[in-house]
Structures are given as C-alpha cells and as structure tokens.
Image (cartoon, rainbow, N blue to C red; front, side, top):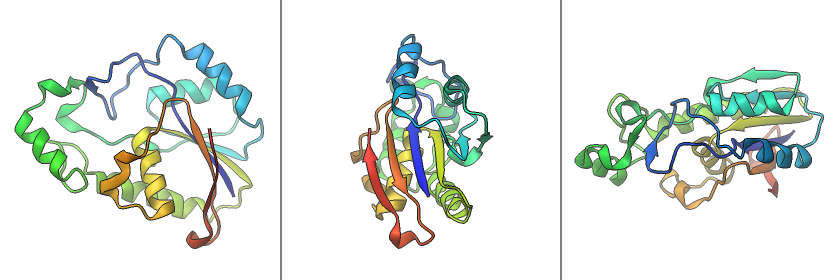
Length: 187
C-alpha cells in the first residue's frame, strides 16, 4: 500500500507557544501553501485519514478529497496543562524533568510520547490489514516522527533529530509485513 503522509501547512502561532492538541489557525500563507501541495499530490486516493484538529481538517477539506475519515490516532501529542502557554511560562522544573525523559514523562494532565507512539503504531498495524492501494494521512510533526520511528525502528529518544517541515510529506510502502515496509520519496 502506498501511503502519503503530510504535515499540515504553517500555523499562525509562533514557535514559542506549546500547542500540541490545541486548535490553532493556519498561517496567512495557507492558499499559496495549498496550491503547492495540490500540484504535488495525486488526485486519486482510496481513502484519506486526517487528524481531527482544525489545522489538519482545514487543509484536508481545502484539498477537496471525497473520502475523509477523521482519526484520533493521528492527533498531535497532548501537552495537558502546557497547551497554549509559551515555553518560557511553563514551570521550568517540570519542563526540565520532561526534557530529560520526554518518552516516559508526561506533562501535567498530558500524554507521554510513548502513548503517542503506541496509538500511531496501532493505527498503522490496522491500516496495513486494509485493502487499499493508495492512502493519504494528514497529520502533525509528532505523529510523523513516530511513523519514522515505527518504520525504521528508531529509538523514540532520537525522533527530534528528524526534521519534519510544515506542508511537506513522505511516501512510504506499507506492506503486509512490517519488515517489508519502505520509504519511497521525501517532499
């Protein structure tokens, strides 16, 4: 199965804000970003899976695909009490504790990275059992990094070494057997 995986286009919220599962608006460049994506993507997907967060739903609806399934497994990590706060306004002791083991430590009322990875892994394990030729996933950087870790057996501690730019996508072959999965293209 050929799977296209897109990160949503740039957001209007600055990098200084922690916004995991918060709904934030897309940047003013959205129409230009949209046209670029439309020119690069195939028109024919068997189905489209999309995070239900607004920055993804706005993109997928503007792309104009007919069969869209909103999938909670594709949501960004939940930062709990840190959502919509600037990184500098977060309790620095809590933040440092999380940064020392962001795989297993959860932000207050939030989600651990291992939890995000597990829901992405379960989604991909179920997807590989479906009978699709070409699928589109519209999602977030954290999810895409977890997909990389899943496909390539990368330790979760290393996923932030993988750049995942806004509006970019990868194409992978998801096989019936995990060991036969492969990366086809990077855009």
